[in-house]
Amino acid sequence: MLSLYDTVSRKKVPLVPLRPDRVGIYTCGPTVYRYVHIGNLRTYLLTDLLLRAVRFDGLAPFSVQNITDMGHMHQEQLAQTEDKVIAAARAAGKTAKEIAEFFTGAFFRDCRRMNFLPSDVYPRASTHVPEMIAMAKELEGKGVTYGEGGYLYFDVTKAKGYGELSGAVLGEGETAGRTDESIHRRKNRPEDFSLWLAADPGREFLWESPWGLGWPGWHIECAAMAEKYLGREFDIHVGGVDLRFPHHENSRAMAMTATGGRFALLWVHAAHLLVDGRKMSKSLSNEYTLDDLESRGVSPMDFRYHCLTLHYRTPMNFTWAAQGASAKALARLREAFSGKGETGAGGGRADGAEGFRRRFREAIGDDLNAPRALAVVHEAARSDLPGDVVRELAREWDAVLGVGLLGEVSGEGAGESAPGGEAAPAEVVGLARSRDRCRRERRFAEADALRERIREAGYDVVDGKDGAGRVRKR
Ligand code: AMP
Ligand code: ZN
Image (tube, rainbow, N blue to C red; front, side, top):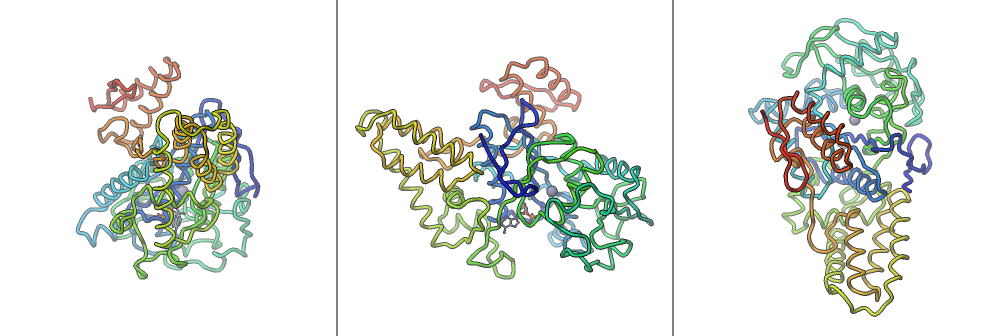
């Protein structure tokens, strides 16, 4: 059984899925105005490891990872007046939409190179504004908001569970006394946050709402999309440690207040990656991407392996020397496994494999302890177990580690093109994947209902020989 360190209860908690058929997982995804850096990828690797560990436990993950294509995240965080997606678009002479699409594609490409399992849905913030408006209206109806002149704010003093996640205390937090005058002049207290903001000049993304023409605040994005795809309550919420406050504290308080449900039951946070002991930044030229790594001879699998040598809650100091040592260790491991041959040689007893199996499973089950699991892998590679037995262990374990222990990486291809090979909307692809799963589990009535929903969205499903449905525009 898998236990995870939960940020709210501050202890390891066994994962007891809310529903027998799936484990609902939400991950805060990228803001698509630039390439993701290796720090982002380390955090997204946590989601991938989690999905793989859930599968390894015989459960079916249902993963939702949003794409922030409106840029408001940083706008609110940094209290800037210009949307980053729009600023990048202006600089490149492109529309904000074009920029967001380009970097969304780049993100999926990086996910595939990292051998991440595809999420079931990648909802775009820009196509879920009606859901955000509905949640804001719900909150307004509950009397927990205020505002005027096109702005709507959430009153955190009326929130359910505010502070439980990050330990934030009203009036004492890092935002206390830090109110940006230009944007948030209408806020009653620094911790309150915007659900809706009035249109500002030059903004490309604007929507009509009960509060006038404008755009939604950042935190409501994840709350509304998580509710849409995972319901009022779901199993696990993932993100980097920097998002604990205010983003996760606020999303949680808002969603719990709006729906009356508990939102995520477990909160898992990844520690940050530093480069040579320093925070990555453009000015230090150390904001490395996967391409930067490759240009220095480090493959995505080398980097993936390197990340797994540390527990996800331990901050990682990326250095070229340590990365080089990890690449060598992975190469040695692959050599050891390939040198084992298909059968025979080794002389040891095959039943010794069970001890290794148990220890690997225990390590992963213990809050995804990848370094401990890797130690078991190294030990097995050095053991005198028969070659075919060791290779079988490597095959089983690579389903969790995903580094290509046997040389090849059998990627399922993250990103939306995975099941369909066509650029269908995330929702449609998500439906197709859910339908595949229903068919595999012989739940044909549900599969048919999903086919119907796909048809309603304007797509047909054609079943491939591999059992996966491909979606085609009708
Ligand atoms: P961003 O696009 O910067 O908001 O980050 C996307 C995801 O990557 C979030 O979950 C962040 O917490 C995470 N993240 C950002 N910077 C780092 C870093 N240096 N190391 C690890 N994760 C990071
Ligand atoms: Zn989020």
